[in-house]
Length: 405
Ligand code: CTP
Image (cartoon, rainbow, N blue to C red):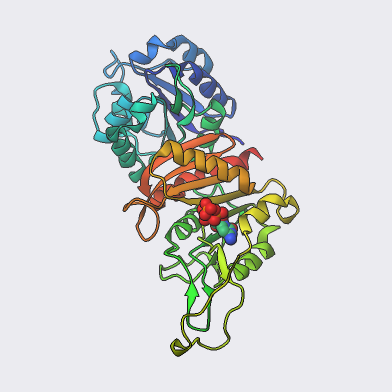
């Protein structure tokens, strides 16, 4: 991974996690990036400007109107390839969301037109406060990338979501954003979407409310970043973008066959489909007649495609990433994270995206999702975002995981 010639503005705000950020500055510099550090005044209480100056070879900015210089935020922001905010306090996130520009950091962020990556760090209560949730949603809507926060020990002695992502994960996320849109060129993705239909007779089936939108947004995002994408999709009505190879299936058995056939070539398999868990043990060849009375339907399990892929590494390419979804009726992000982690372990997946399907604005048939992403590097509460924004967050994580393998 090389970031040769990339210009990164690293904004450091005043949180205890600032002490870890020199590692990020050094890592990015070692990868070839030109790193310019901007610190808020309170950040300098946690780590010295001199440390960053020594690591990056450039003086650190903090004043909006420095004597003698050109307008520093304009000069800094122009030509930058990435603005990275780490740690991003609740206050910094709020300022960026609203567009306040009262110091060099916020003025730089308001001027920059390049991608922005934010690594939040704060106490759990602040992260979960509706004001922060709304500000984070505004940022992700605007296309700002997020890495973390993860759950873990906090400076207050508590445990919970709010801990800044680890420096290596921040560097990997920055590299993923910087390696522009074609970062996934040469990679093969298999994405499943929609619900399956398990026949009872030629006209009736067992199905579910999946619209297919989440999987299609993921497939589109991966294709936009250069991946060759095959979408294995159940019966849906949502249109599928043209640059995706589509395999239409109906039942869980057909989906299994289509996925397994392609699994050994895939760098990434994302199982966003809502696969029916049960099928009728026998289905009638001819339509069941009402006059014959209500039929007794005996259900048997469908094959669990994700669990099969997770438990047998010989089915997949070495170093590939397996992603599953968990549809849960659980609005509490902490409990959702626990369920995600449990499902990750039970299905043998590398990543599980758990989404709450009990709220009116999350899950089936709506364009938004309330989700938590669990992976080996911790759980990330993405909050309530559009399915497109969730797709972008997930593909960024997957791209970073591929870069590490
Ligand atoms: N899945 C699968 N094959 C199945 C059922 C589910 O591959 N027969 C996949 C889904 O595509 C999804 C993940 O497993 O990626 C989780 O699905 P979910 O319905 O949340 O979990 P279940 O395993 O069905 O468990 P439960 O409903 O009890 O939580």
